[in-house]
Image (cartoon, rainbow, N blue to C red; front, top):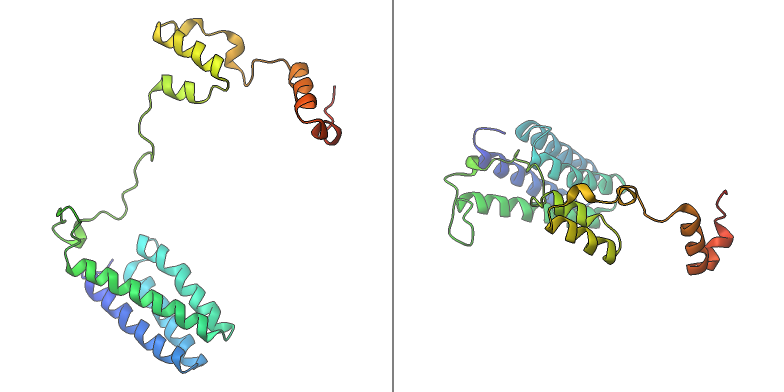
Length: 189
C-alpha cells in the first residue's frame, strides 16, 4: 500500500463521487471511464494482492458489469454504497481505529492486514478430537471411560475403522430404516 493510506482512500472516494455523478446522468461512456479509473487507482495504490483490493475488486467489477448492461439504477446504488464504505474506512482511520473498549492502535499502519491465524478453532487436544469423530453415544461414552482411565492402547480395533458394523448389517439397517432408498440405491453384494 502507498505510504499514506488516508490519501489513497480519499483519492478513491473522490473518483467514486465522479462515478456517482456520471451514473446519476446515465452517462454510459463517462461512467465506464470513471469505474475503469477507479479500478486502476485501487489496483496501483493498494496492490493486486492486498486484502483491501480483494474486497474492492468484486464490488467495482459488479458496478462495471451493471454499466455495461446499461443498468444505471443498480450501478448507482452499488457506487453509492461503495462510497459510503470508503467514507467509513476514512472515518475509522482518522479516529485512529479506536475500538469500543478504548484500545486504539498507534496508527492504521500498525494493523497487520496480512495476518492469518494458523487455525480458527481453539486447540481441543487429541482426546477431544477423537471423541468428536465417534458416532454413537454408547461408543463415545465407552471411549471416554478408556481415556479417563488412561487406557488408550486398549481401544478395540474395530473402532479404528470408519464404522464398527459389518457391511451386511449396514445394508440391512439401511433397507429397514429407509425402504424407499433400498429400491433406488441397490448395492453390489
